[in-house]
Length: 123
Length: 107
Image (cartoon, rainbow over the protein chains, first blue to last red):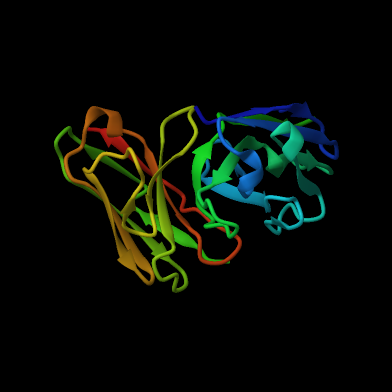
């Protein structure tokens, strides 16, 4: 069974850092683009970042570019999101999501999601 | 960035009702439009991709249509398990934005 399990969320002060992890199982992790998508409390979904199968390409939404870094370790079937200079507006549930494409090119929609990890930025 | 506007923001319906949700894009996106269902405290679930293609395992009472800037998600006969929030998302050009969601509530 395909599973994505996020961890690493918690309470952090403004300006602080946090690293989220997503452990994948049940599929060939190294064959898929992977994404982080977040949802602020009571708000809609927001795509945050994605990463190519071999980690050679990454893309970010403007609001996090320069502060967040997406990475992956295919040997560990794991996806990461390093979040620095955190702001109150980064408070959200962060989901790890798998791109639906089974080819080298992503399709930019998401057919499997983790359960989410809550990040709260507050003093 | 491409903005997606859903209407209505919420609706009340009964089991067996036909429900229609619309999603309007701020720019032309051909058929690069996807729909998700999300229940409280749960992750989103992909329902429809490419405007009208049913994701594997999704009941056939769900359907999608549209192209260009105007899209529709239809539930032909609402079931108890369909009470949820539905969101559209485009996959045309980055950033891959979502609509604000439509909450389907029990009347």
